Image (tube, rainbow, N blue to C red; front, top):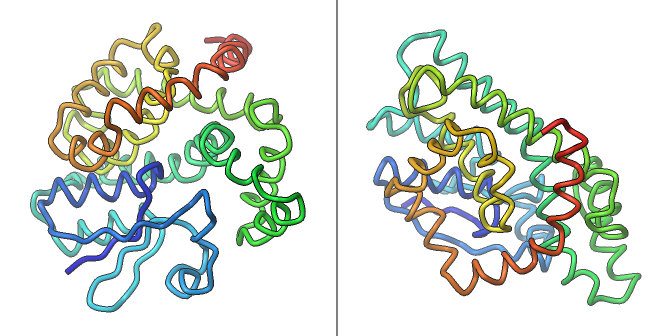
Length: 266
């Protein structure tokens, strides 16, 4: 049985759950309390030395890093196929996945962390806040969280995050001219890996970032949301009352998002 250490708000965990659902694989979830920094507890760091989710465990062996997990599942359970057959298309899928990991994911973290993670840390005494942040394994993530803890959506990271999202949306609009899905018109791991980052915009009521002027991206995300895998892996974790709560939180930062979008040329 596959075990997945996960959190409902994690885009990285969401994309792995989408792949698991697409392949109809049975799995058991293990909730990791990210706001409470359970991912930095010694027991979890033994599983995942980076202290992030998700972690997939199968046959007693852990696989970490979400894109690597998706490729692992594709190799181990090749049907239904989520990797193209044509080598250039395979390379293009991997390019999108790498861009998501290197650029879109840190940008999503910068936008989401102040909205859903910051408040719980601010409840702690200042010395405990500092101690929790200092436990973050990777230095870039640690420094970013330190800035976001202090400044929230006023942190300098936010402008760059919005600009990165904007560039991705522009590039996706162009890619989708060839068909319904991002690579070669065929549903693939690229779509699985991109979709959760639009869930972040949707849940905070920031959908205008892709709905205003990008009809192909808007239609692509609607198709993605209509898939059974998306419903099972992502949407079911956001019942109406939870979505309303997140929308309220998102509304508080919408003005700043709009300012940064204008600066990015959107």
